[in-house]
Image (tube, rainbow, N blue to C red; front, side):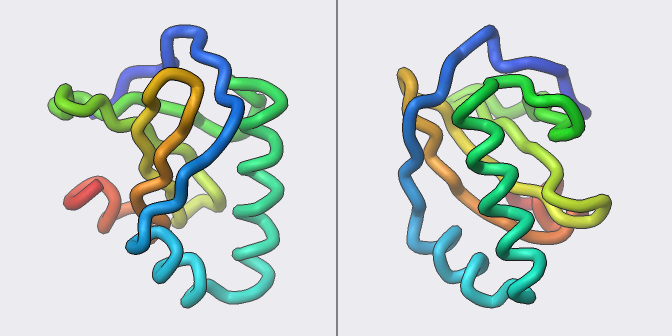
Length: 99
């Protein structure tokens, strides 16, 4: 289902979709803190260890990538240039069904 890597793209900023903002607001505060830490890691290193950054197969216009916040929560995003467009933050199964 997934393919590792983002083609060596360096991310310099984020754009938060309204859906991402809404889903982030509903997260437990500890999970929200962990998400924020993972986003900072992604800015420092496009392939930080432990993030499990993957490209979803079958999504090509646009390419959709995911990374794990915890064992059960993932973030889906698109990459345009050096900007990451954060689409969703939800449980693993929801992201895989509707990234």
